[in-house]
Length: 84
Length: 202
Image 1 (tube, each protein chain N blue to C red):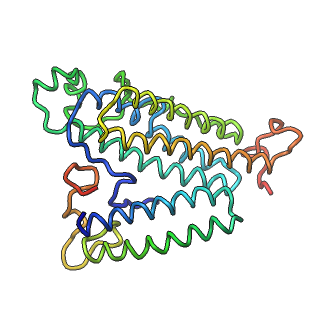
Image 2 (tube, each protein chain N blue to C red):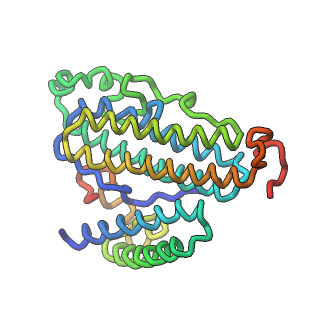
Image 3 (cartoon, rainbow over the protein chains, first blue to last red):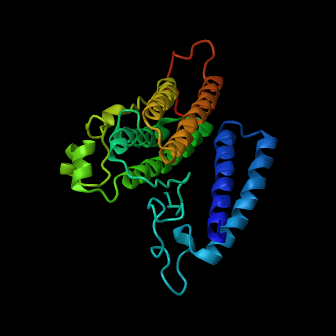
């Protein structure tokens, strides 16, 4: 697995954990263990996202811009040729 | 507002196109218990939900449903890529093809276009949350049925992921119903509708 694919796999796993914890925290806002879990994976997600965007291009519109417009340069995630 | 994240929630990479499968999976986009209905149901119910935790669950589950619409769209478009007229005829995809070519149009497996009649927004806390609980189970059954009919592991993997999300969302709406009932008159949940009868709950 190349670096780009590996980073995307990490991002997907971390953001899954974060979103899962968020849905739970909506209904259990005082659960400190769930909050710790959220914080842990959200930190890792931020790191991996930063790394990915610096190397391979934006994941959201807020990471686009710079010298070239890279937002539309890669295949879209739903395409067979995207690395998704 | 929403912003787009340039990734699928779970990867979709289908090596072998097969329009037969697209013909039935399309129901999870535009059918009675599909993801388009789910997103619209929860995101529209939010406005009359007086409990902020539960409005949060509706917002965040509804947002995830948008990502599920995208996954189903990805599955459908990959299953129908590079088809020859012979394959289209042989697979029975011709009835869809004549109207939509290989575009992704929200309809049921029987060809009925998506209809807002599939969703309920009653503006009543108990009625809406029970609708949501039932909707998650109905979507789970639809995924079960698809998994009974499909044997390509590339197609089954994302469908299994989506099936599991229905179970988790069911749990989360259960949390929502508990919170709502904790906030309502425990002697009679059905005596009033806090979405309408009281200006400011709590």
